[in-house]
Image 1 (tube, rainbow, N blue to C red):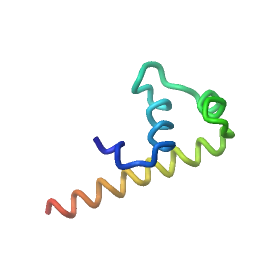
Image 2 (tube, rainbow, N blue to C red):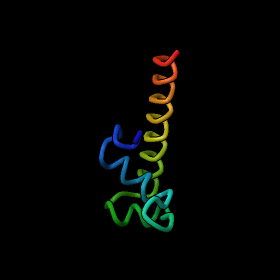
Image 3 (cartoon, rainbow, N blue to C red):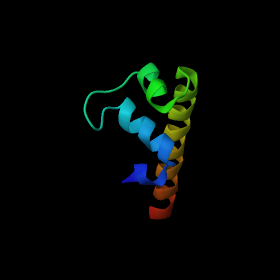
Image 4 (cartoon, rainbow, N blue to C red):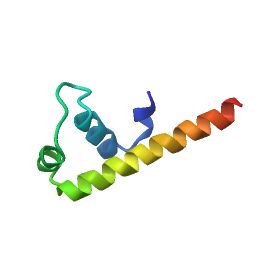
Length: 64
C-alpha cells in the first residue's frame, strides 16, 4: 500500500478525507479531530498527494 510510505498524520488525513473507513470527512472535521486548522489540513493533504505522485513516478522509472 502506497499510503504506508506517508508520515502518519498525512496518511490519516487522506484516509479520513477520502473515506477509506466510511464517509469522507470535511477539512473542518479533520481539523477538529487532529487539532489543526482547515488550511493546515488542506496543505498537508496536498503534500501527501504530492508525495504519492513522486512515489508513483519513482516506481515507474524503476520499472522501466
